[in-house]
Image (cartoon, rainbow, N blue to C red; front, side, top):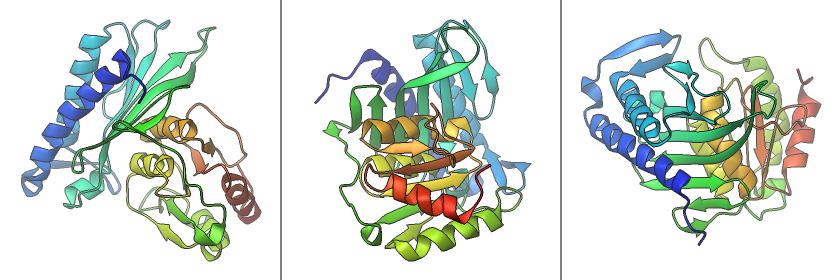
Length: 274
């Protein structure tokens, strides 16, 4: 096992502390006070409390680093320092409906050398509080589940493959585009799954549980850690055009090393990338 760095320990401590709160609140989910953030997009007191817990932990450990937070937005500190990209509760709808499939996602992202924006994601963690699974990765040091090294699935044939996706919902996504992609990929694979947490979908691609994943319209906090996990586990993550961006969020196509290109060909054949 690779030695766990101080950075990963900081991130895991924050994720686990937030996870403890989420587990407690999940047991009382029917009592949560819920407010609308947009069509079919809910935010709860649990979400906000988890984000504050993570913020406090990370701020204490790296006081000069900035933040990109799902709820609080951007908090700019020293522009020469990295920033944290945080989703305190990925899978909020699952959480609020009592479905035990959600995660905490934290990533560290470096600034570009010229100060013009943000570059590589250097570390990431996706923590599932209910199963107590901690998926983590560091750039050039591999991807791990607790102390077990992760590799993407070794399957080489689409007809054996399980693919995950996110389905458009009210007020979000492009149902016609999704349907076109599904019609191209669905008949070629063993199955399509939609479980409702993009961070966990990507972590599961890294762990070899899925062979691939696609979704449009995510945010950086949904996929920052997951993109690094897949890449460090030997897979590929691109947008619809095949670009391997530091964080693929507006368009995400992840896959193992054998099948990503085939999935990409099917996707591009179904739509005009844009």
